[in-house]
Image (tube, rainbow, N blue to C red):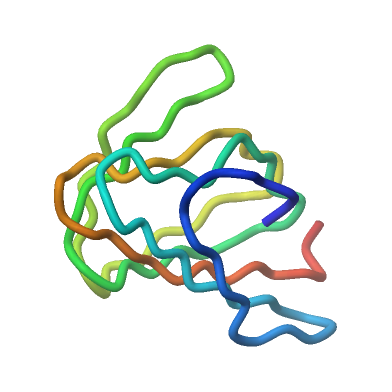
Length: 101
């Protein structure tokens, strides 16, 4: 992910010429990534069940339920702020495909 300054905790677990794997932890409701734009295609793997509140560039907020282990993928260029939508901790692993962008 590109530079983001939110309250979620991102820890890079693996990084090489082809991929970057980051675990994102959202310890409380409202913890967020901060506004960012993805420079690479990426895959998200939820670690726990939860709901993300995703704010798009036009200000629209979408509540997106996630299930642990059920992945989704997005292409480069996605711009948003991602926040924990529930009162319980949320976490996911993000896998960026560094050669795609």
